[in-house]
Image (cartoon, rainbow, N blue to C red):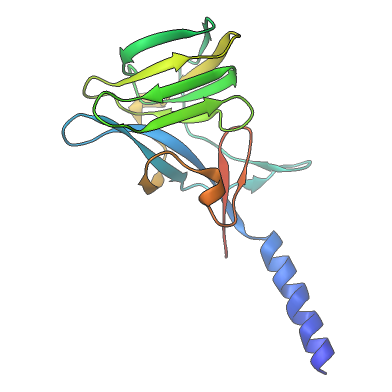
Length: 180
């Protein structure tokens, strides 16, 4: 009887672990009440769904005017802000984001954490450098009507993929698992 109960418990626990709801987390550049830019770690409210063939998919929100950007090696943009709230999706290269009013920084790397939300549309913005020896290629994807997808703030600062219990890093961001 004990063995049967234990096996049933383990089977149900395994099924439940595989059915855990997963959410995308990513770093966002935002503005505080003094119009100073800083970093937050966001978790989007929409969970991943099973993809029809294999894997998972996630609707990221309504977007418009996608722009393909090529930035030269070892270049810098200086202080700037996005014209509208947007996704910044790094396809290749490396971006380093810093701020004039704090010591926070974010490294956006191809294939590791290539998705960032740029939402510091007030104030003077942030600095971005592209320190790699190759061109950096990115997509700028503004949110339609400036409406940022629903999310919750997990904390101040960049998302640290290794600090999230039950998460794994993907090509664009981090996938968070939540028990049902």
